[in-house]
Amino acid sequence: MIDDVLMAKVEALAGLRLTPEEREALRADLEKILAYFHKLQEVDTQGVPPFSPLPGQINVLREDEPEASLPPEEALRNAPDAVDGYFRVPPLFPA
Amino acid sequence: MRPNRRGGGIGRRAGLRIQWGNHPPCGFKSHPRHPTLGPLDLTGALRALQENKLAIETVVDELFRVIAEREPTLQAFLSLAEPEELKARARAVAHRPLRGLPIAVKDNICTLEFPTTCASRLLARYRSPYEATAVARLKAMGMVVQGKTNLDEFAMGSSTENSAFGPTRNPWDPQRVPGGSSGGSAAAVAAGEALAALGSDTGGSVRQPAALCGVVGLRPTYGLVSRYGLVAFASSLDTIGPITKSVRDAALLLSLIGGHDPRDSTSLPLPAQDYTQDLRPHLAGLKLGLPKEYVPAELGPEVRALVDRWCALAEELGAQVVSISLPLTEYALPTYYLIASAEAAANLARYDGVRYTLRIPVEGVQETIAQSRTLGFGREVKRRIALGTFALSAGYYDQYYGKAQRVRTLIAQEFAEAFTRVDLIFGPTSPTPAFGLGEKADPLSMYLSDLFTIPSALAGLPAISIPAGKVNGLPFGLQLIGPRLSEAKLLCAALALEEALS
Image (cartoon, rainbow over all chains, first blue to last red; front, top):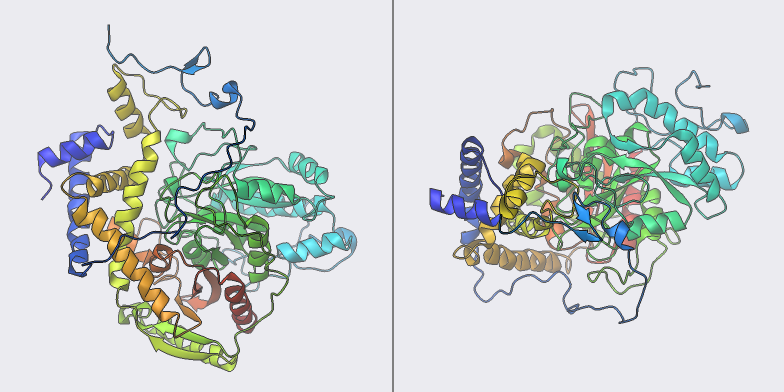
């Protein structure tokens, strides 16, 4: 049901890099779970809107008033690599 | 100096004879088996402090006496204060209404005092630079955070076995799980290591562990308690709720943490409400619906006999019990796992090896992100991210995620329709009492333990689990579900049942 192409697509979109063993275990789990979840197709949802947890509460914004924010050093405290007040990422285009 | 007798420690200095809480009996046969609370819950401790019959130092000492005794077995906490440091913090707020009383907090709720790890290797060293609104409100009222409790990684699980730091054990039987995902909070409260705790409930993670540990767990109406500072798992389902020794403590904590928060755009625009004010046992005249789907034949004779006893008890208390049907219950599980996993896949995309502590340094930015995530996340988290990614992906969105969102609407409508005929719905919180560690290795069989807590979570409804007898010698929970924002009614009904059951 989940072929290699689909599995690779899911893995890339999910930002994961699995070992072949992990990949096979995950594929088996997903196939089993999705086979069970297929029963949802029995429910007639013709004309039924998607659920909204808070009907009417849409685009809730706070007042546009300046307020104190985190100092940069606090915001960067958990960064594995920070320099000069910025998060540092690995080079996008290796030299 | 440790009191040499179990119980009785807390009031000793004031010459008061009060018994300390409700310790599940595992290994301590001399202690009376009692399914509900001991006399000293949070509210009881607060009154004793107010009347100067108790010192806050004594409370802390007593909690840590129990912790020293039980924690090596239970492993309920991921981080814990030092007693003297906690006393200093408690004394500093002793003039406030809650008098410096300690509370345990699930480790997916941000605090300034301790790391917030979500029981994930990826966040093992994460220290939040801000604190959750619920925690800030408790602190403003004079509570102190005593420690952070164990959970299934990112709250994904029903047994607390999915913790990167090892499982928590059930205080009633250390070979069994405490439930999950708020298993550390429930075990700590049940064992008397904490007076009360905060947990989070996405599909049952407050109520199910409360049921399996024999304590009270409340899931509020979605939006009633701010999610600000609760590490996001499934944003349309996540709630923060109290885990306590008594219904009155649940009412107290909900009063402290509830009410609108401008920092959470899904917070309901309602002022905080004091649920303790009108809290009195009240079940008379109420119509209680027992869904036949919540007592399927597979539950076994012991559970069915217990449910029959609950019905008889409710009628003695003046309620009318009617059988109802919620036929969409069987679709709630797939609906929930598709929606929750899809939202988790989106929410957990932020863990990219750049902003949150863990980075596996390899060549290239994409590879760094992927390796950091793959090594940082545990197996169940990866499973759900993959499931959610699949459900949201082009070509499958309508068939899975879109379908689940529509079925969710129908489930909410089914509840709304039921509440035109009954005041509250009740049944078992979980199909079984606490199961053995390692017993549910198959993900689907684990998911099934949340069968009765998931439907109401999907509909955003409030629900409470109270200890209501034993099955196989283990605590078993009764769940009451109410319409949106019916917390006051729900708590009064729960209080009536709690009193009658004790």
